Length: 266
Image (cartoon, rainbow, N blue to C red; front, side):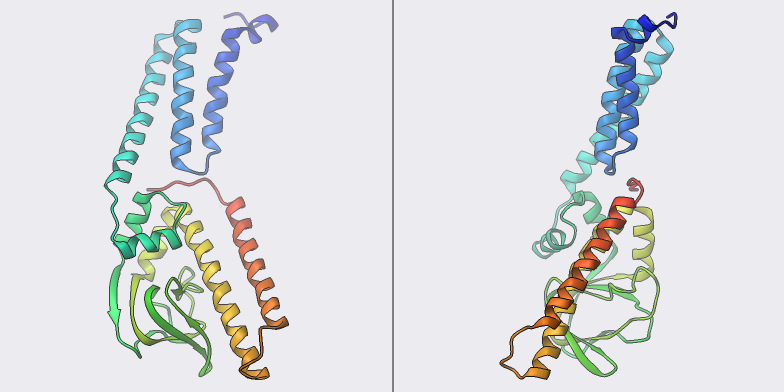
């Protein structure tokens, strides 16, 4: 095809442009499923362009190979999604912690850890020590203390150890079960390897960690406000200040999400 203004603006040229535009668009997708869908569309348009306008069998062959690869990967993802099943407590975990993640990814994360039933008094983390595991409370309650002073209480749906577990830093507080509990735990090193391999998983966990931190801050400030003002006093400016801090934490997580590279799940 001779390169002229007319040829550059012809119907065939626009079809070729569309193929490459869809391919570039696929590279901008943050979710692997969307990436593959746009890659499939690009390949279909590319095959049409190569066959009808270019009469180029080599391009048709490789565009067809690209199409088959992405269709195969989409079929595999669909199969993994269909076979990912959850118990009632696992489903509650996924809904609370990882609602935006594919079911197969959530299933792989859950399989990295284990469920434990523990008695009152069990210590999950110790202030100043390394955090060996990330804990998710499904039932029961944990008291959070720092410097020997109780500062907050975590109930069902809360994480314990989330502040430092991804950074291999010492625990900022001691967490002790204040009643019989059931929790999910995952080894800290295994978790760090998992989130390093899957940016989408990291972002989902960090967003959930931010929510847990917000709840802990609010409960801690409510406890301190009542101690200063008496048991009948309501939440005052301290709680509002804590909510502002929690909002800032959520905003920081959102900014990290926006600046993070595209997902490359395993």
